[in-house]
Each structure stands twice: as C-alpha cells, then as structure tokens.
Length: 213
Ligand SMILES: [Zn+2]
Image 1 (cartoon, rainbow, N blue to C red):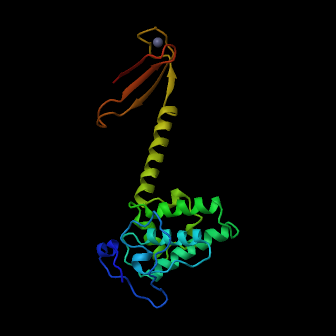
Image 2: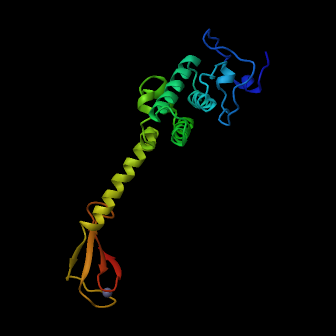
Image 3: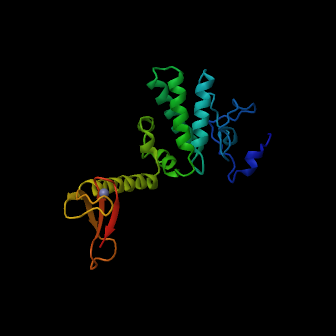
C-alpha cells in the first residue's frame, strides 16, 4: 500500500468499512483536496456515477464536510451524496452551469474555517441535506456573524431614526454666519444623565453647524 504524505499528517488511521472499497488508482484530482481528510485518505470510493463531474462534486463535498471532523467516513459520504443528489434533482437531472455554481457555493460555505457550526449541523442531522441546498448565504452564516449583522441593522435603524425623527426646525436660534433664523436641531445626552442636554444645530439656509449645552 502506498502511503500518501497526507495520510501521515492525519491523526487517525483510515476507517475500514466493508462498503467502502479502497482503490489503488486515485480518484479524479480536485483542487479541493487540501484538508487532512479526503475520500482518498479515508479510503472512500466516490466513483458513484458515470458522470465524472458528479463524482468530483461528491468528493469535494466530502472533503469540505470532513474539515476538523472525526465522524465516520460513511456518515460524511452519506451527507455529501445527498447534498449532490438534491442539487442534481433540482436541476432536473442535468449537470449544467446552475448545478456547478450551486455546488461551488455550497462547498465554499462548508469549507469556511469560521463556520464549524454549519458542518456540525449537517453531520448531526440538525439540517437535512434537502434543506441545506435551499439555504441562502445569510442562513449559512456562522451564528456570531448573524448576531453581528442583526446588531448593525438595529444600530443603523436607531441612527436613521435619530437623524430624522428627533430633528426639529425652530426660529428660536439664529445662525451665527448668515443670521437666518431657520435652524434645525436635535438634542442629545452626551455625558451623564444629570448634565444638561447638548443641542446640535444646523442652519437650513447656509448649512452652518454648531452645538451648545
Ligand atoms: Zn446660516
């Protein structure tokens, strides 16, 4: 048996399985095979179909799913197969551009080092492969990124409301530059609660801005 360099880097020996035939001639070379586990290293046969693109898709999905995972090979292969099959059926059993693009996107998201949750949810059955292939990038994003996006959205909404709803036009103030009295302003608590509010003024005539408290 020829030992590959990748095998030496792998902490676990390949899992033997009666259904998973070890092949001495390698599967089609894929640029995705960079991780410590891949079908070749694990002794998994991904020559499942007559179409080499389909086989390469399953192989790439397997490699992506296996990143930092120690699940049994047959589990990873099962999820990879079902993802590929789902996309294939979605494209009415055609290997076309839509099929390729879809699988590229799914595989890229699975390979995201910052998103171990996605691999975990698929391999523990929290997300079914049929559900996974319908998810948009936002839904696939790591939980931490989702919370960040939500926080930003809320902040933007607050800022937008602060800029529009709180602003009022008055003739109580006079612009120091052009002496007009059409001045819009809003007030904000900039320091501690027991200190007076700061008033931010904008001259609606010349655009001069000033503040006082
Ligand atoms: Zn002015």
